[in-house]
Image 1 (cartoon, one colour):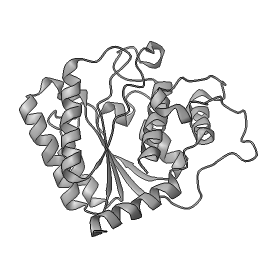
Image 2: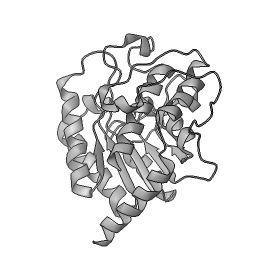
Image 3: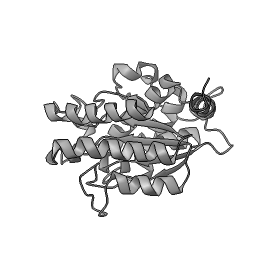
Image 4: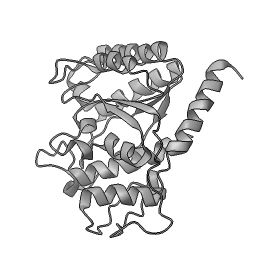
Length: 251
């Protein structure tokens, strides 16, 4: 077994220890968003194992809770979908997963950003990657962004590879989880698939884990804000459950 594979297995053990995102944990996440409403939130079949989200009024005996010991250092790189635009920061989907798994999470995501698209903070995913490296995380979560739809496709493909390669070169022992681009409740444009293909190719090139969770919000307008771009808190909970399931499945 080569060193890279041993390191990957070691990080997988860390994830296994902290990623106890069972249906009970997701219920806790949903409770924090719905305030005990007892509402059932539909989750895509890709995360069917986490679809039981009936919220208990109080923790029950035998329920799984976040571990008391600090979890792995995790950095999230992404756009407004990842930073929880226009909702409480604690409701951003990386924060929801982090709270349930005890991740030591830093969410670097910024509105408007992409691999090429410049965000409201004046930076791109490459800039976020530079910040991520300084934190020396054991896990990086990065997602393609629809913000890049308006950019030159060749430049997006090139910069996606460059940023992913940078992360791998600077963080050789980190587990990198790369996600497809999120869309809302409507049918995504065909070009979104090109962004997914770019990050898939880059993931394969740098030994990252590509997680295609599909479009968990599809056909559910009630999970969208008035702009029909950003999810409400319940929508972010659905994304959190889908991503958590995909990470757990990746092992």
